[in-house]
Length: 501
Image 1 (cartoon, rainbow, N blue to C red):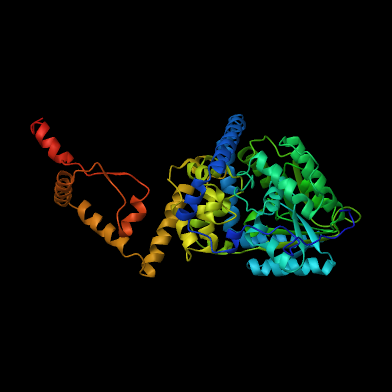
Image 2 (image 1 turned 90 degrees about the horizontal axis):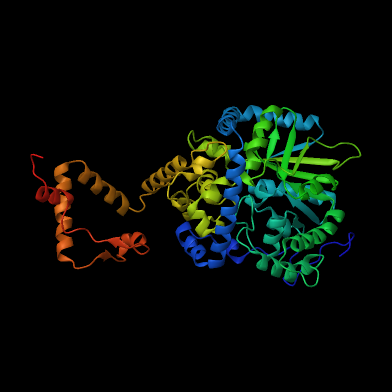
């Protein structure tokens, strides 16, 4: 395909690779999806190796910074201050961007944002776009909206390209293809690149340098011919109307400079008041995410510059549930997230089940609190996410902006329980809690319950309790529960210790 060619359709009549089938059906609640992740031995091995490597790199570079905790506190304070006055900072950002020559659009939800994007691309007469830093566009399902409108959207980040060509879905915030190994990537490139553009070279091996070279060649024609680019942003500075993208490969720089039209989709929580605030986060983000001292590429732009770069600059400020999160005095702390993925890399649950189990573009501990905040707790997927954690607290310790993730998980669990009460769902669990409350409220009740359970231990000749029927099955089907002892601790104490002692 030459630089002047337009995208062609594949055998299914699509311009771009179809997403996996499971993303077009209702996602499974976390407990069911996690079982599928645990069964994938290759993915588990890939995740264990990748997250372990990133953890070790992060630990080394963080240890070099003597005032690391002070930086974390500064990041927390800046974000909190910004969220308290978010409306004012957004108005300042809009005014600054407009003054710089950009056009600002406001999107209430995903449908609103996709409508704006489709209209903007159609207005240019183009049939394809390139993308960078596109997590927020995945949140709103932009690729499929463009596909339905007859517009091809090409991922240009290496990992995102692997995911797209593999008919896959991202499983990590920072490394979307973390669940894939080199052999799998080579096969994806060999089978799919030629369908959608420049094919992979003959004899492509598993060596990273060859895989990266194949991706570079495949993307080059797209960069040279595509006149519209779509980006996200890591930060948006209200004071100057400056959008910031940090990346490691240079694909972002290509997207932000070569096209004639640039459309940036930015979540409203990405705002920072001043350029001085940006300094703190450019120290926190690379060390927490990739384990680097600084980002290889940091791009900043505020609007069009005559004769240099995109001449039509649009910025879409996206809500999509963020004001709902902001309205929760406790839950709004999740909006401090800078998408570094440190919590994913240290989470023992994520490492074993992978990102697809969370049913969202935001997986891991932060996804378990952010998704219910953005989408509510009305559906089975989001109801299950706050329970996708052991509450070990490791995620809280590594968060660069001190989001108390473990506390917020408990907060979200409370919301789920209250929602169940409101709709009078699952009456068995409240009944069990009331019974436990009665037992724990009086030592006589506790002694009576212990005596009754010890009787069961004497009569039943088993060492463990297997799967139980009914509501208890979800707990016992995956656990070996020890049989209650034939003697309570109180009974043992009376028999073996002198009361006077």
